[in-house]
Length: 194
Length: 299
Image (cartoon, rainbow over the protein chains, first blue to last red):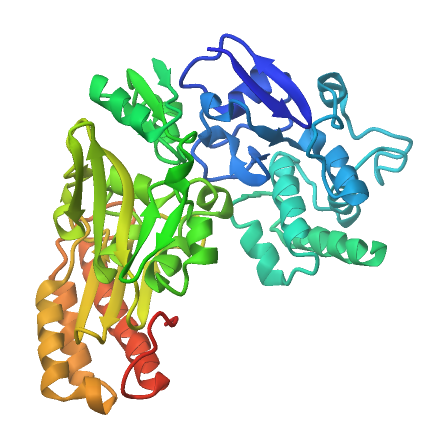
């Protein structure tokens, strides 16, 4: 089966997709976008969270065939997505976006990998680094996608808003406190920028 | 495996008639788990995501016609006034990611005794709109659950919508689990006051082979409320009545011991939830004006 859909603003096509395959598998194994992580494969952990037509979903529970013609944003496209949202309030045309090559080559490398200085990061990604919310990093992509979407809906989130929005993302390293700090930091910076 | 992608409801019914073993997939939150874990290899997957009607709802005079694929998030955001019990239940489903995909149609199709929507549907009163190429029918919710993960659907039928009675009084929903998010219910309880008919309805989840109503408890409470003139005088429900109601609800359970809890714990917890939800809803009923409850207000 062949599936056409938009990933990070660019039209993509995946070939030889098995009918029972998940969107997560297509992203990781067929499109070379391993940012979305594969852990529980049953929607418990949230590490495969992507946005499907704007909504955060577990990509392991979306059948590949169900995304035909739809729009997906993964963590690889998050920086561009956030930038376009800040500049134009979103990208509907699909003309902007991250090329597949750029997305594949994306890495948080720069002059200073500690602070992420000199690299293109979304505000929420930068806040995770600054607050020390990344330990082993496996849960991070899902948390970033979920947190970014929450901040879009709630520019001034309460702790309860943050906890609820991240309740479907498990982290076994941090104890969540630094993650809470990171999201509060991203919200505060977002507030200053406006 | 074949992936069937009907573009309309009529096409979906035709596909289901032609391939009765086809497994419908909408949110995928049950079906994809089974496929990912190799527990199921259906010959046909029938994708319902392209049928936009299934994600819509209509608020009528008496009831809400809720499309089978309306995600839980939408129920929480838009139908809290009309369907307070179901909105509360929806909020206990898994996580935001799952609530953005899953809906009541899938819960009914899977018919797990632990499905979060069932106690709320039983308490509110509902009918399942099932359709095939042969025609359409409304299945009363009380007749829908026929066994563990079994329902009254014929092999060629699909769930199109659920017709749920609009709240005419306070409704509550309670669920026991190890944390607030991402839990399958150890057991759950839904309760709805229906001041218009002066009746109380209940729903119990995860404490019997199917979701069930505590009918003996309802009959007892209906009689006790009538006898004491409670609907008119708006008095506090006497502790002995609440206790008897709770005991009868616990007695309606037929639970098992499993990894999530023991049978005796489930019976106990259902009794506690029955007493609490009765107290919460009754206080809300009394609080409005002591006589009649505002239609559609939230418990």
